[in-house]
Amino acid sequence: MKLADRMSLMGTETAFEVLAMAKGLEAQGKKIMHFEIGEPDFDTPQNIKDAACKALKDNQTHYTPACGIADLRQAIAEHISKDRRVEVKPEEVVVLPGAKPAIYGAITTLVNPGEEVIIPNPSFPIYESVVNFVGAKPVLLPLDEEKDFRFDISDLEKMVTKKTKMICINSPHNPCGSILTKKDIQGICEIVKRHNLWLVSDEVYSKLIYNDEHASPLSEPGMKERTIMIDGFSKTYAMTGWRLGYAIAPKELVDMMTRIGINIWSCPVSFVQKAAIEALRGPQDFVEKSRKEYIRRMEYIHGALNGIDGVSCRKPRGAFYAFPNVKSFGMPAKDVMTHLLNDAGVACLHGSAFGKYGEGYLRFSYATSLENLQKGMPLVKESLEKLKK
Image 1: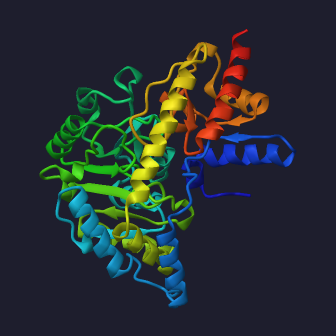
Image 2: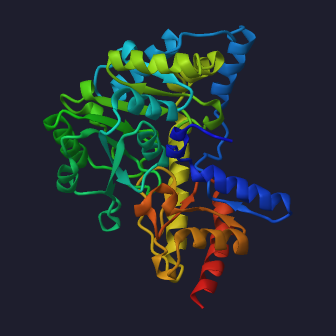
Image 3: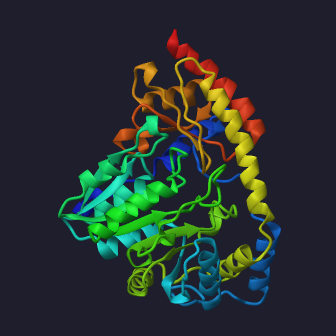
């Protein structure tokens, strides 16, 4: 089959490929512990499900405006205005079937072929994939393990050229579990303003921060008009399968991202949008309860990984990922991952799935029960210690 040349530029998300491998082994009768997918193991809160059921019973099953229903855009605007301490209007909100369309929409509408986008690396692979797909150049800024997987603002400044159009950031961070401090964000914003750049700020884990406050560039003076802030419902409210996210951006950009939606998905799902209103305006006890549970899991997996000979792991400060260093085993991280899958029945991801600077690391998702972690980590220890012999 002769495909369009552009398809060679599009990457993938390896988590789903590894999940397929793990499911294949399960089909053969092998017991697998799943730490590869970043999906909360909690069920969606009942009040949100009830709101969706009510919407279905009320026949909310038709097309909606491509940018989202007015009530949800209003609810999101109110939520972000309060949470990020900046006035957001409903017309500055676009509702999308997940957060990935916001990444695609922002890069596609703003970045021309030949222009450059700075992306801290390792990172969620879709940023680099979309930049390549539009014919632009990803410029990778290494995250420093010694700095808790952050970067020096001076290093970011050095990467800006006349071709730079955009910077993409993600905090709390996938895959490293790190966060950007308020000082970091202020430094990034100064560079963005000084060089007249766009900033994509992926904040889908904003409610999963452990002992710090979330810092958003949207809150900084002069940044609202040059920031595309991305958030969603999947991680905060355990709504991964509902597929609903949103972006906050200047109205002109919202209109262009809406046009992309009209060309691809027409509109977000009607009754899911009704459920999302309940998620934002209903009780928030689930959010805090799940955050505290992730802290318990984080403490366990952080200690367990550091208790393995040859493994070192920085303490995650947000999201639900541990990113241990396995360079001491002297083999590609993908080979370590494959060994764990076949030998121990433990599915995780190799760090190089998140870019070249992820080589030498593994990503473990602890969005699973503490019981599963307590079963799985001894298997990881036993299996990795075989590689040391």
